[in-house]
Amino acid sequence: MTSTLFKKIIREHRLSSHLVPVFTIAPELELACSRLADFIGERFEGERKPLMCEMLEDGVAEYRRVRKTGEPHVAFMRGLFSRAHLLYARRYVANEGDRVHVWWPMLEPVTAFEARFDEGATAMVDEACPERITHKTAAFQLAARALTGEGFRLYFEDYDVAHSYPDREAVGA
Image 1 (cartoon, rainbow, N blue to C red):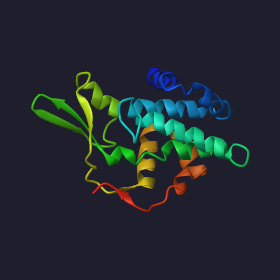
Image 2: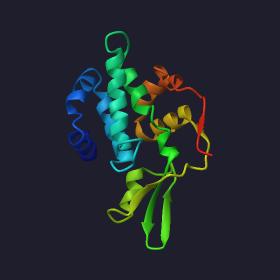
Image 3: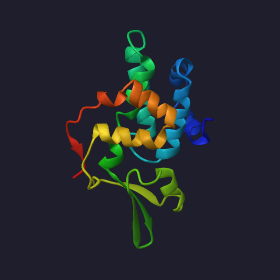
Image 4: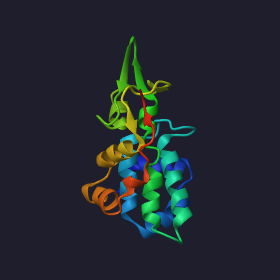
C-alpha cells in the first residue's frame, strides 16, 4: 500500500506523471518507493531539494535513459539509490532547548527521529558523519532497511543493482 507521505511528496513535486510509466511496468517499485519515503521523510535535504524528491528524479532519469535498450526497472532502482550516500554527507539534528539530538544514519528511520520532536525543531548541519562509508555500502544499507525481503532480493541479488555503485571514495571522515 502506498503511504500518505509518499503521495504527498509526489503531489508537491509534481512527479506523478513521471512515475506512472515506471509503476506500470514494475508495480513492485511503488511499494519500494513508498517504504523509502517512509524511511527518509520529506524534510531531509539532498543537494538542492528534499532528498526523497532528488532520489525519485534520479530514478526516473535512469529509467528514461535505458527504457528502450535495457531493463528500465533495474535502471530506476540504480537511480533511486544513487544518492543514498547523502544520508551520511550532512548531519540531521533536532534542537530541544539547550540540547541537540543527532540522527545517526540507519539506526532508525528519519521519520521516527522527527516524530520525537516539535515541528520545525529539526535542521541540517554542514558536518559529515564520522563514519567512512562508500556509495555502494550506503545504497545497500538503505535498501536493506527500506525494501521488503522480496524487493531486496529482486533488485540487490538477482539484478545485482549494487554493483553499479563504484567503491571509489568514502563519504564522511
